[in-house]
Length: 278
Image 1 (cartoon, rainbow, N blue to C red):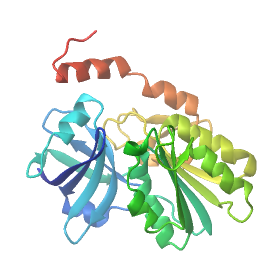
Image 2 (spheres, rainbow, N blue to C red):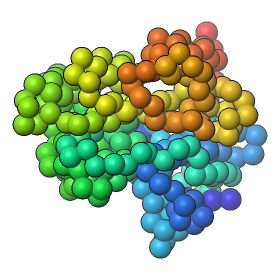
Image 3 (cartoon, rainbow, N blue to C red):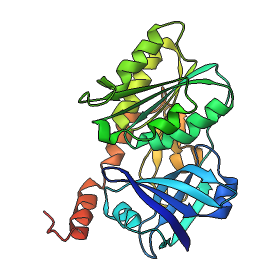
Image 4 (cartoon, helix red, strand yellow):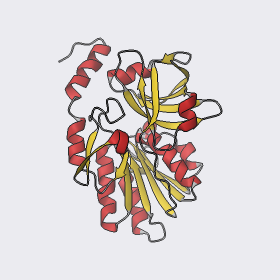
């Protein structure tokens, strides 16, 4: 069992869990994740390790409570425990010094972006961070990201915070200015956002890394559920990723696979809420 030390709400349906997991905290690197189960027999959920404190033996997880399983995870209060926290899994982020990099987060993807953006800054990169959301209440970790970013740019679809529009609008300003153009771009968020960023950087030959979120069952490459197509070749996000070259990802295939169990997921969410399914 893994004790939940803290459970805070950061945004609608978004929780930050601090969990005691000493071995994971000591071994994790930016970009890696854990497989979490709230109780025996429950679904395994992949969650990026947002932060870690090896001295305290804790890790930080950001959980968007949408489906039945993630709702059960965030329902565990401080002082409670999670049945399983297995990891760290996945390949760590490739950290190098590109000089200038742009780190782009959309919605809950900002939480996934945080550890890799910090690692890039610690490697000597000049980091410009762009984060976006539907409105101000969906913007998270802005102060934490600003602490090591040369500049933090915020966009919201309704204009309630920062610039009105999308993260791609802010990225375009960087790309078109030779003094600000990044040597590499890292994007984490909804699939349409990552796809748009990859298409935006492609004509300029800017290296672009995206973090994929396909359906994952075991996190060890055994089940094949997280299969993605990259450069025309099938890869497993759990052992070959989760980060890939955005210019090589087949986003249409990824979008299709993500919708496979949408009806079943909706039915389970209705049951959890005590409603009849349709």
